[in-house]
Image (tube, rainbow, N blue to C red; front, side, top):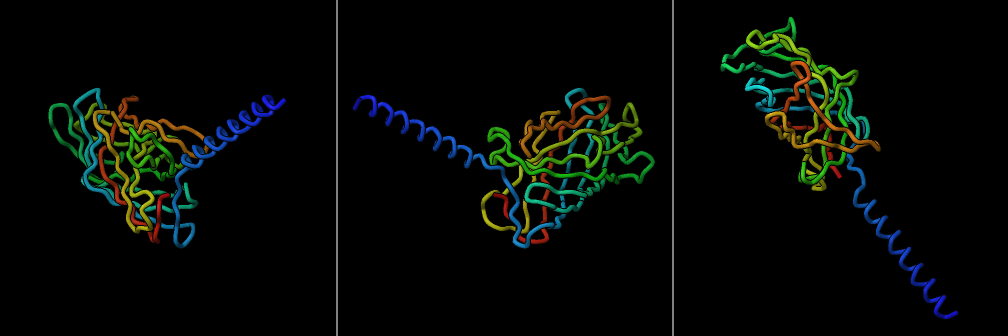
Length: 230
């Protein structure tokens, strides 16, 4: 009888240890969120330097000298009405010829993207050291923009899909400026999966008939109030 009770006690303690371990893992894997000193909604602006888009199917590249944008954080994990305009945009074909890159029928060297949403989520440490990513996706449908460039073939292309970058700093206190790092090259984007709102997304940009594109740039995120990513 004593042996049986001892066995039962050991099993109970083992079960408690398992439950405690699971709880610890769940706590450590808590979804990241924006903490706002002034609550939500919270305005933000975007500002980047050179952006380079390229694929592994050719040596063609799309480059923009800078971008400016703005949006609204609605909740600790979701932003909406993200408007981004790219400036000084050029296309470079496989022969090295450069030409203006613009919205179809638009103004040379200037590209206005369709409104977007952003989702804050978790990514693998092998894909982003902070383990926190920010997904940019079209607000409706999957088209980001339709571009034209006279030196490319075809001259017009729809850019579709979504893309995620690593956000920093994380758990370093309240800040007014954050960074979103898009680390990619030759259609190989560093963040290949992002987890948010109970689902998994595999970000991918496509253009020129479904050819995967990559983006390399560092986007500043300037908040209207003190924000911390936790």
